[in-house]
Length: 154
Image 1 (tube, helix red, strand yellow):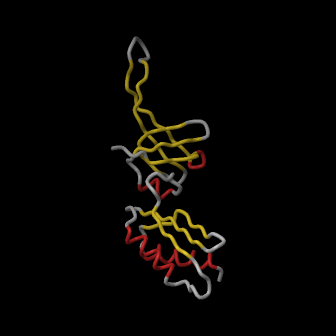
Image 2: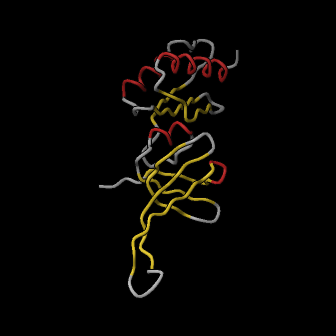
Image 3: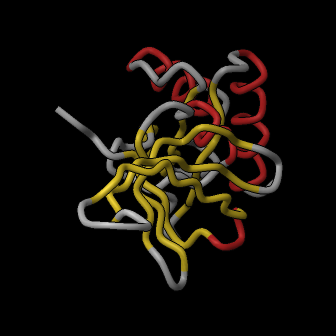
């Protein structure tokens, strides 16, 4: 079995053991540096990274093939890539870019096809002077999203 296939199988077993964790990305360089990025429905602890790392490392034979292994969690500043990441961030403020527009709003709903963002905006009154606060909403298909990031507010 090829190294990539072995690692994929071991990762699947690790995620079977802890169903709240899931894979974001996984690469192997030509010199066998294995890099795994994981996320979790309830976040990722250091112990989660250690458990996934051990599952992979302890079941590969360095005598057969030398390798290095790095297991990390998806960073707060990393763009969202998987539907499960959107689901765990419902209620948080996102910045979402499409080909033509940029939205900032609260993630209020996640479906199989896309997301719903809501925000408030100040607009000129339909009649007379002054401005009025209006609620806005954008329904965005995943296919239209170029990049989506959680906005960190302090």
